[in-house]
Length: 509
Length: 130
Image (cartoon, rainbow over all chains, first blue to last red; front, side, top):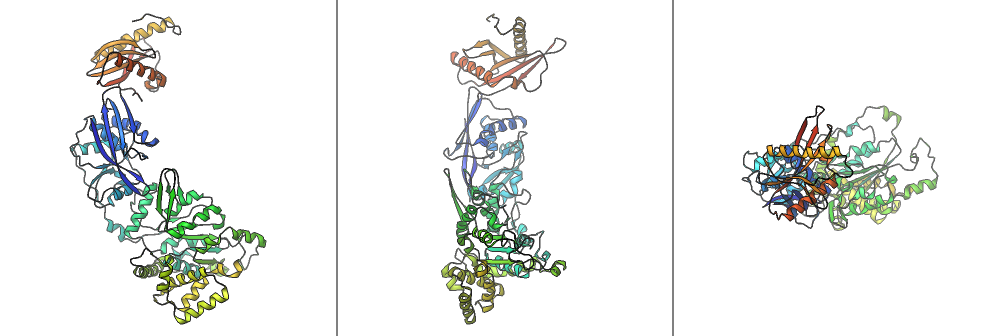
């Protein structure tokens, strides 16, 4: 006797179909699972046995051979419990498979026979079938699975329910979610730029950064509000579009980081790994590579506080994803590519004691100490950061004042408008924001008027800017012009953009 | 039945064991088991009772307790004990050319109560071969 049930395995962000083949032969009682199962799959034996008995079925007699085909790929995780249990019930004829539309079945079993949620359901539902198909998923994953609207999602909470459904004894209504409704209400944030006192120029710079997708470094003495400002950055970023939201949700689903209540992530992610994080933690890795912080910050913000305190290797591995917008991780078993289009926001003190640029407090660091501190950041890395912003300590009167800033909502409206302009401009190319313009696109779109050209020339002369800094200034001024709604870059835009190149000026080096 | 006192076993335990097996057999017959052999041994292990429960061949291990113990009776049958029983079962199937029959391992536990009466429990499908 042989029964086949379709299930799925996740590899990276993609999934492929698995056939769970259950065969029984008469003889001494036993069970073996083949098809390169990992420990969690092997342990399903005990869970399935207990779940069967506690669901009112009997543990069927005979020797069971369970094959997870294709046999040459490694199978991970507990998601095969439910298909194995259903296969055993079908093969021992404890239930009749009347309602067998060859559904995809996934789910972890608890010893009491209830079905528990598993990771990667969204990835499975999106990559397995382009045509309408039945999928039987744990009830806790139903919302997530139903995001794939072409599928007929059957949520089950127990083995008994799943078995009765297959036997045609009960009907379960396919689960549906309303995607439009999820996107209608604006994402709500607890934080707001209106809470921040002073620091007008930093707020403006962050607005420019989020409008053009530019990377930012905030430099300031301790307590000046670098972290506070950075944390509020997602509140002024444009909301995620549906395909973007699905992409982010897929990533979080694969990592098991999805909040079970709200199935779709509509907020831009904000990741702030501690500075002791390893390079693998940042980039991703493992025997079967898992996404790292750069991928978890995909389409959102990767905030690195105390930037120079990170290990040098950690900072250097950031270079490639900053350039490519994706990371490819190769290990003996598999090579996987994860998206990593994040906006880097770094924060640091100007020197080890933190008071180097402070007008009031004296810096106690020696010149060598300051130099060593800065030398932890390599030139190529700083080159990839478009905006350098000084965050000065607040003055007495500013501290005492009530916070009176623009609310995030207002800023976000301007950012959205600027992004829309960019989308129109780059329509059809892989570029999606000003920060990622190619040299050719720069020549085409960064037109300067006469006055602006003169100003830029004199800036290069006086500030001794490098070729790279020149490019950066052009890109940033393009964004500033977009925010102003201008098609040609004017002198004032260039002037503002030049300000954001603190580190290119002499005094910092 | 070989009448032999094992060296590690007191005379009393031996008779108690035989007594227990008799009680187990009687209990199984009451449960509609058809007993076909008892105390079958291979060179590695021994099976106390072999019986048919409907068309399933059942290898039964009898455990005697002179006190009420806690925990599963399954835990009283160690991994090596299970291996011995499985070996004996395989030998039995081979010697008697039994093929294509569903088999099962049951455990009978017999507790001796304080008043001398016995309490019998049957655990069906107590373990599997792997």
